[in-house]
Each structure stands twice: as C-alpha cells, then as structure tokens.
Image (cartoon, rainbow, N blue to C red; front, side):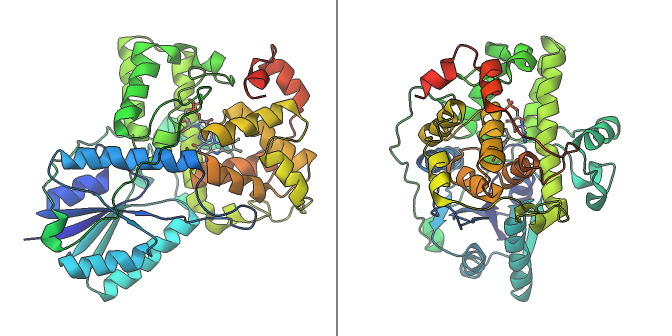
Length: 426
Ligand SMILES: Cc1cc2nc3c(=O)[nH]c(=O)nc-3n(C[C@H](O)[C@H](O)[C@H](O)COP(=O)(O)OP(=O)(O)OC[C@H]3O[C@@H](n4cnc5c(N)ncnc54)[C@H](O)[C@@H]3O)c2cc1C
C-alpha cells in the first residue's frame, strides 16, 4: 500500500489544486495535514500572532476543508506550535510515507522552508513535490523567464495578455479514506473561535470554499454587480463595491483560475463589458505581485525594497505609529480606515493606499511597520500582494512614478463625498 503526505498551505480547497489531484491519483493512502504557524516577515513593530478576524477566517476555512474531506471519510490533521519541516519528516517516518505533496509558495520565507524540507527529505529518501496552484499562469506559460519579468506592470500585462493562456481548472479528485487512528496520529483539532462579526463589515461572510463559491455566485450571477465593477471599485462602504474575493484567494479557498473560468462563462452567457475585463485586470495585478515576489526574493522585505540606490528617509516613532494603528492620527479618512481594519480584518483598496501613503509620506514612518501591521490583521493577508503593494506605495517598488503621495483630504472629498464612510467608523 502506497502512502504520501499532502501538506496543505495556502491552498485550502480540493478543486483545481495540482498537489491535491496528484497525491490522490498516485497514492492509496493520503494523509492531509496543515500547520497553524506564524511565519512572520517582520516582527520588529508588532506583537506576533494573527489578529482575531484573520484567525477566525483561517479557522473557518480549515473547518470547511475538513468537512469536505470528512465527506469521503478522511480528516485534516491540524498541528500547532511545531516546526513543519521536522513534523513532516517525523510523520513520514511514522506512516512510512514515501512522498510529500505541497503547493509551491512564492514569497521568501515560505520558499526557504521548502528548500529545507527538500534537502532534509532527500537524506531520508522521501521525495518532495512542490506544485504551482495559486496563479493564473504556470511558470512555463509565461512569455519570459522569472528573472526577466518586466519591472513595470503594464509591460507584464501587455505581454502576458498577448502571449499566454490561462489553462482551464483541473478536476477535483476522488478523495480516498484516511483514519488517523490507523496510524496512531492525533490532530490538534480545529477550534473555531467565537469572534463576532461587526455588523458594519464589508466582508460579512465566513471563510472556506463553500463561502467562496457563494460569494462568486452572488457577485457575478445573482446580483451582477460585476457589470459595474469599474465604476464602483474605488468605493469604501458595504459589500458590493468590489468582489471581496481576496481573502478566499489568499488562503486558496478558491483558485484564480476558477474565478477566471467563471468570469469567462459569465461574459459569454450574460454580458462582457469594461467592468468584467477590469476584474480580470485586477487579477493580473495579483498575478504580477506573485511573480515579482518569486523574482526578488528577500529584497521584497527589506527597507530599500526594489530600489537599493534610493536613500532611506523614513524612521520609526512608536507614539506616532500607535496613533496610526489605533485610528487616532486626527485625519478622518485614515482613522476610519484603520478602525475598520482592526474591527473587521478588511480595508478597501482605496483605504489601503491612503493609510499607507499617510504612514510613509506624512508621518515619515518605515513602510515595513505598516506592512507588518497589515500582516497581522488582514484576513486577505498574502505576502506577495501585501509587501508588493506596500513597496509600490512607499515608492520603493516597481512603480514608474517616483513619488506616490496621496492627499487624504482630497481623496476623502472625491471618494467619500457625503462622509458616509468616515461616519460609519467614527
Ligand atoms: C498597502 C496595500 C496592501 C495590500 N495588501 C494586500 C494583501 O495582503 N492581500 C491581498 O489580497 N491584497 C492586498 N492589497 C490589494 C487590494 O487592496 C486587495 O486585493 C483588495 O482591496 C481586496 O478586495 P477585493 O477582493 O474586493 O478586490 P477587487 O477590487 O474585487 O479585485 C479583485 C481581486 O484582484 C486582486 N487585486 C486587486 N487589486 C490588487 C492589488 N493592488 N494587488 C494585488 N491584488 C489585487 C485581489 O485578488 C482581488 O480579490 C493591498 C493593497 C495595498 C494598497
């Protein structure tokens, strides 16, 4: 009987998931495992640990995946407080597994763990299979090598749109049964926290694949809000101004290809317009930041970012930073957005750009402190998107414009003309 370990990371779903499909098609027994760990890119400015809503969304997503596995008499082992590399190899020894299947991640820390695992597993005679599942394109579909990825988004987009094709999603595999007791294994269990949703939340749904498909159905087919996306996407109040797919994508409850596939079907069966294209355009931004993270590795997390020659102007002031994090800077737009983030785990894209600009360019604080705070609280935290966007907004990433300072007063007048957003969070 052949046995392998299936290591779930930020790919918490069964459909369109290459490592999942490969593991179940090749092995009689598959042991699904997840490590609840905090792999922080920056710990200098914020206390370690996930914010309440980020934790809640993750637990809901794990619980949903576990239910899907349980339908086929399998079970997700959830382990906490252990070193994944050590634990995976111990698990392989104990269960006589000969292979480990896992998604390939794109950010530096996560890739370091992969390297360590691959080296150590080799010594033990266990093969490690890391497979791409989180992007629209595979590396082999890109019209350039990772090292040659253009530093400017528009060039990346132009070439990819012309020369690459998004492959159709792959089928969900038949899950084989797995009983932890057969191997004398026990899981830490999945403990759903009891964090209540704030009634003002723009993301009032739970984590997990079921909720991801409900939101996709709602945003496309049911409400057809997607048809006005280009006009509404800079909004800040409520559920409908943007897709709210980000947290599901960050944890892999749904894949970018599944969303793309559904979007194309919607365009064929209902309507295709500038807005439906714009949703794809935004998915390309996500795509771009993933590949840029892979290309630049550690640089994405350093103070200089992708512009080592540019002098550093920002420093750190704990009292000022505390005002920013607690929503007490005195700038109504910034404060309302920061309050929303802590209360719900979400902030609109318009809000994120404004609070980032304010921290870096108005308060003179090191961009990494802000990125670390986002890392703690965002339910859609994704290392490539978060650090890529922060660098971009701090003027240290791949932005053709040298200085991206937002005038928060003018932004409030333009995007919150009636003060509805600020009032909601005051
Ligand atoms: C400082 C800063 C930090 C950010 N941190 C994150 C993060 O940790 N995780 C994250 O997913 N997004 C991040 N973003 C990007 C963006 O703000 C969110 O993806 C978006 O607000 C999520 O809402 P939505 O799903 O309704 O997006 P929509 O507007 O509906 O867009 C659809 C999808 O496109 C992708 N997308 C849209 N804009 C961007 C962008 N600028 N960069 C990357 N992907 C994008 C997301 O996957 C999103 O779900 C950050 C932006 C800024 C300015």
